[in-house]
Image (cartoon, rainbow, N blue to C red; front, side, top):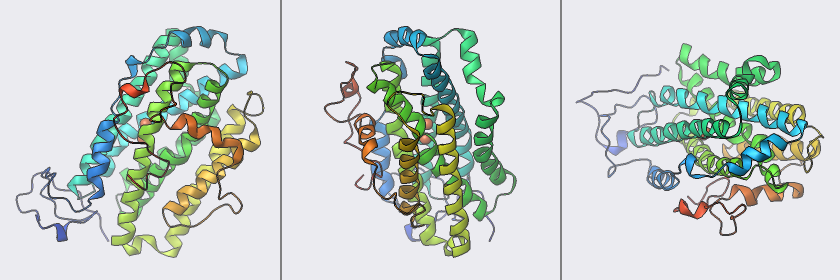
Length: 349
Ligand SMILES: [Fe+2]
Ligand SMILES: [Fe+2]
């Protein structure tokens, strides 16, 4: 099976919803919000728009003081994790149009455009954070740490190579692999980073940066949900892309992602950060891997890690920025929170 680029100008495109397909469809490319086949996109779109936020409206003056006073091991972890997140959001901003170019359902292309916009906001928020808390030299050091730190580079290469593979060889199979890579990035990779920030909050440090991360996390949850739905629609429409052998490969990708995230957690967080242990990191990331794999109908990867670990229940409190009791640092989440609460898997979106 070949993979055809979606049309740009196509006066002969199909208007009938019954002919609309995720890939290799004949789209008119018209943005018609009233005539959609994948009806879940409508709620997703509104939800994502309601989540709009502006990085500079969060006050970082306390963070400027806190950053100078972080213990050496905390600062090391903070810098490395931020460097990783900065890279991932840049990669996302750049790669989403590559995926969208081969999706032939206009309502989904619109969602991907909103997602790409949000990834740009995330990148901008990192710029604002760095500008507010450190010197220009430190800023450059953090921005490009992923190029010099071998372990960080290895992680970025795994996802980067998968994205590149699709760019260089545009087959339906490589598209699914890119989408699964995207899903891993959104659903596993960010999480030990988020966890580190939330733990800083528990220790009363870097309140503004934590608030930025909470808004980012809320967006990432919707991105994760979007890719889950896209992959599930493809599973439904293109059975040959989801044979037992291929599912094993996708599942192994998730497994590799989980292993790398744990290894990374050991390297940047280790046993040195008050409030976090290696065991907590490992259990939590394995649980996330199971959650992600199951959501795509691939089954459990790690037996015995099906439930959220008791030791990590506190993470949810920070993740849920829309809840009433989120006024952790007198920040003002309610100013933006127009949408309802989003849980990790967004099943009731
Ligand atoms: Fe992002
Ligand atoms: Fe994202």
